[in-house]
Structures are given as C-alpha cells and as structure tokens.
Image 1 (cartoon, protein in one colour):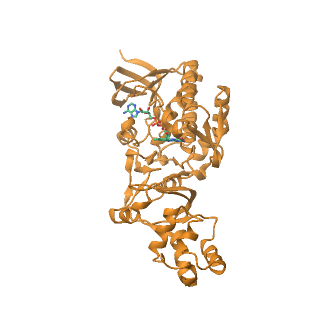
Image 2 (tube, rainbow, N blue to C red):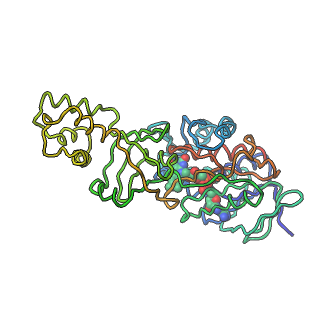
Length: 394
Ligand code: FDA
C-alpha cells in the first residue's frame, strides 16, 4: 500500500520549507522529500555564512524573467516585511548592509533552524536522503516513487532548485519534471557568476589579479554600481555578478571605474598646477596603484609628464579608465554560479498559486521557475514568496 499524503514537496530548500510551513498550518498532511543529508544547505552557506535573507526594497524590478509581470502577485502577497516579521518572532538578530540587504548578525544556520522549527510546529514531515526515481500522474493526484517507498499525493510541489553548484546536490530535476508534464522550460544559464577572459586578455591583465575597485558596470540598459574584482580567471565582485545575469556570449561590458570622479577633469586640473607629475602618479590618487599603472601603460603615457599630454591624450586616458570595454570569453559556469537564469516557463503557471495551468495539483516554486533575482537577498525573497503562495493553494 502506498503512503498517502495531501502534499508532497520535492526539495527542502528555502522555497520548499516555506511552502511546507504554510500548507501544514492550513491543516494539510505535508511531506518534504530531499536527497541531501541536511535541509537548507544553500541557506547555510549563503551570504558568506550570514544569509542575506531578503532585501527590504525587493520588487518586480529586481527580477529577470521572460514574463516580467509574473512575480508581482507572489511578491505583493508575501514581501520582505513578512519574512522579517518571522525572523523577529524567532528572536534572530539581523542588520542591514548597503542597498537594503538584510543579514543575520550571527549565522545563516539560525534561518534554517527557524524554518525547521516552524515546520515541526505546523506538523510537516521532513524525509532526507530520499532519492526520487519516478513521478506519475494518477487520475487524481500523483504517485512519487522514492528510495524509501511509494507515496500518493493530491498535490505535488517541485521545489528542487536550479542547476547551480552541482557539488551541493543541484540536479535539474525540476526541468525534467516540467518537460515530463509538457511544460516548456526557458533556456537555463548560470547567473550571478564570475566572468572569464580569454588567454590574451588574461595575459594583459595578469598583474592586476586581486585588485578591486568601485565601478559602474554597464551592458545595454542594465547598470550596477558596486565593487569589481580582477581574478586569475577574469572578473568577479558584486557588480560583475550582477551584470553576468544580462551578459550573453560575444557581448561587451563597459566599466566606469571610480564613477564619482571626473578623471579627465582631475588630470587636466593637475596639469595646470603640477604639470611635472607623471600621469600614473596622479591616477594612483584616484585608483588602486596597479590599475593606475596598467591604464598608463595601455595608453602609452608612462615616462611622460602631464604637461606633455594634449587634451585629447588626457581624454583618451580617462576614457580607458571610465569607459573600459571588455569582452568576456565566458563565465565560470554552474560550478560557482549563485543562481540559474531561466527555468520553468511562467506563462504556463498561475501567478497567484504557482500551479501548472494544464496539470492541476502540480506546482513549481523557487529557483527552478523562470524568475531570477539580482544579487542582494532577492533570490531568497522569491523563494519565500513563491513558496508562501503555493502553500496557501495546495
Ligand atoms: P534550493 O537550491 O535552496 O533547494 C533545493 C533543494 O532541493 C535542495 O535541498 C536540494 O538538495 C533538493 N534537491 C535537488 N535535486 C533533488 C532531487 N533530484 N531529489 C531530491 N531533492 C533534490 N540568495 C539570496 O537571496 N541571498 C544570499 O545571501 C544568497 N547567497 C548565496 C550563496 C551561494 C554560494 C549560492 C549558491 C546561492 C546563494 N543565493 C542567495 C541564492 C539562493 O541560495 C537560492 O536562490 C535559493 O536557495 C533557492 O531556493 P530553492 O528552495 O528554490 O532551491
């Protein structure tokens, strides 16, 4: 005899646990299955171990999707303040960093514990180290075959996340299930990921590995102002991770280093008052020293005095720093990507419930759906919000 449940949730991550809490609070018999040894592993490692659990300003504008209006309904029904209230009810100390990002003061494990204790209190059951071998549609509900036996359920919630960090158990199961049930999947790609440079560019930039600078990074209409870091493989830092979600093979990104400073004006002013200075010395007052030398060498002005440089030469030098064009060769891929862009096509889901329109009882929540947040707590907010609305509907 198959075990019977009202709701089976595949994936004990952020979205799955939130959905379990809400469904169990409504009196549903809820079973959460996960193949991992521990629940919420991505929560545990997130935000450098402090979990950037939401962003106080999170709204639809902070998400990428082929169907940009889709996320509005869930985000409006469960916003950052709702999750914050839960965090506060559990006495978890938190602080706001720049740009509305909220972090735990102590440890990301506090968030995992909070979710587990809410699940327990509501009566949801968690079953770990359970592999899913098949999912079938019954005349009413679903049959889920697992390494621990067969379960029949009225509602099935797929909360198994994306493809990022396969070492942590990411499998892409959600996309296979979507296809099995005839739901299209928007092409997936690594996002919030460091970008790589080709060997020739790396040789030019080799001496810069480890240098970080404030920058505005732009690609088309998308622009992010945060730190950029040069690495041994290419470019990283928050501004690069942000733009990586918009980047496609062959595209150029434009970096404006030290965006608050008008470098051309500063160099020209210095030429009037102290023209004997070397351009790289003056640049080094505005930029990390290694970058200053790099740009002076690229512009072939090392060994010259500012007084020797024409307006045009100064403008060209400043433009190389403040309109630095780079063509990444690729990205570091799912190995280091924080999230997966694309996913289950939201045009086939009901935005109020996350239910597949053509398969009653089947729900997709969290990262596996084609809704991807910026860096800064937005992806967890989407996991909480989509899990919450599905939890009200299952
Ligand atoms: P999530 O991936 O959390 O959970 C999926 C669950 O399904 C996992 O427990 C997995 O084991 C299970 N599973 C997968 N395949 C399965 C299968 N075949 N059978 C059974 N179970 C299966 N976001 C943010 O907002 N703030 C932050 O600070 C960070 N920081 C961060 C750091 C790092 C290093 C990474 C990789 C990611 C982040 N993120 C983040 C992103 C955030 O972690 C991510 O968006 C959410 O965890 C997504 O939640 P989900 O519940 O959808 O999937």
